[in-house]
Length: 59
Image 1 (cartoon, rainbow, N blue to C red):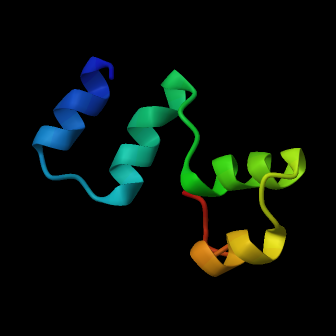
Image 2 (cartoon, rainbow, N blue to C red):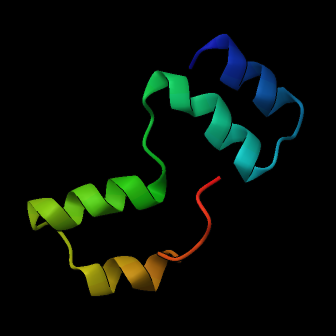
């Protein structure tokens, strides 16, 4: 965890703020990680869509 994420988490951030702070570190959000797992064959697109909203605005 770098300083930007540490500072953001102390301030009780919303999900968007944490997502923005994590981008420079290359941390994947749940949607991105889920898509990687679908492409690897670890899960299905149907299962991913059950857990997260695939159509939610990213930022």
